Image (cartoon, rainbow, N blue to C red; front, side):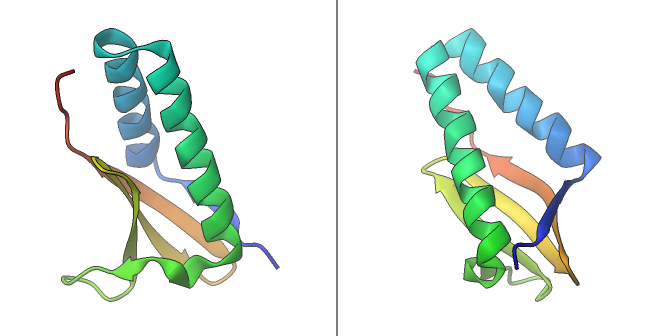
Length: 93
């Protein structure tokens, strides 16, 4: 059974910042590609939550590579996949 995905406030804020950055400094195509990558990874994680690598500082928090510059950070809490945030490395075009 797939886990329900819950976004933290920080995750929502960071997602919106990256989308805005892509729209301002890159292209709409890059923005759409990023959103699709997030959707795909979250769908995959909801079905296979343990595929992410555990972080070195906290065993209950996992991360998965989203792209060369972004990682999703999440935690499994019973039947919920809590999407904490993602780390983004901003790079100019």
